Length: 117
Image: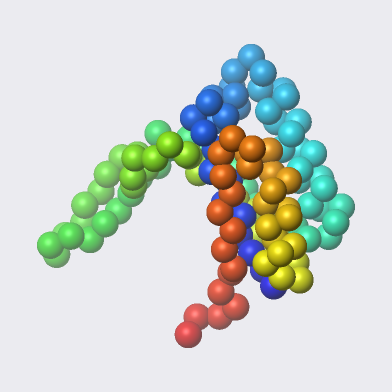
């Protein structure tokens, strides 16, 4: 089964990407990614640019409403995602708990649709 692990970081964690402790921040992610690859469960994944680069589109009252920035105010920022293939949700949750952002932020785990209905 495939699952998406959405990495939701705190603003403080997100700031570590370019701060004085960025080497420690990135080494944690490199080790996590290497563990996923070594276990043979990683399908794909990407880090994302900051929320200030996001653009949100909504259709409202017959027209496009385009908004710069993330779609909602939140205390956690979507920093990236992984697609993993594991036996079941329990295994996906174990991998989510190992993520560098799980201790301070959150990891949302969702099954990937096998096919569109």
